[in-house]
View 1 (tube, rainbow, N blue to C red):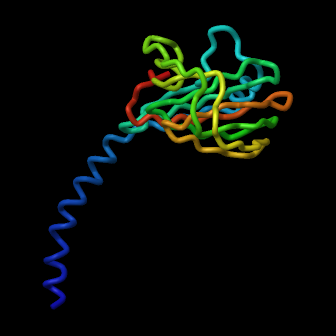
View 2 (spheres, rainbow, N blue to C red; view 1 turned 180 degrees about the vertical axis):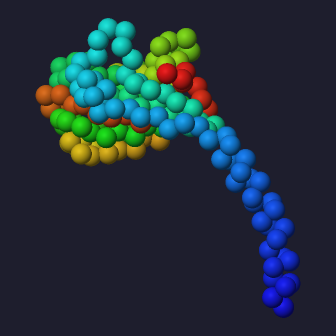
View 3 (spheres, rainbow, N blue to C red; view 1 turned 90 degrees about the vertical axis):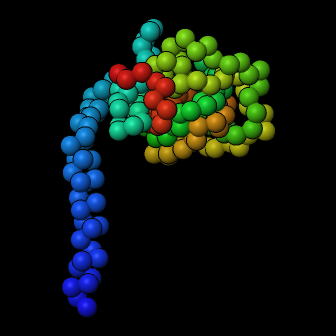
Length: 176
């Protein structure tokens, strides 16, 4: 009876072993984003500076790592990304963040814009969100914004700086 179990198991080993070996030979290098690069971006963005520090091929999808800083009184645009999901980790500051609902005065982003090609992919922008859910974010909080979810900072308390991880399964954002 034991020999039958081993015989039944062997074909599975010969199928799985090449898959594991193949996956290991196609491994991509790990990428480090040093703390100094993140700390350097805890300030207003310089003209022409991209929010993404890196966008890397993570094996069939891209992952972007960026840092964004927003100040009270600055115009805050509402956004919706069709294909890219985001995870925000608040590093410092606090704000009211609205998700869901409907973009007010929505305009489709130009496909050739820097926002689409090098930041967060195709989508739309608006002046506000109507009918969304308010989230009170503060340092240490994390919020996940799935692709297709409108989002907007409706009120910033002084300033807010956050790490943005962008998951891009369609690889629509250029590698950096």
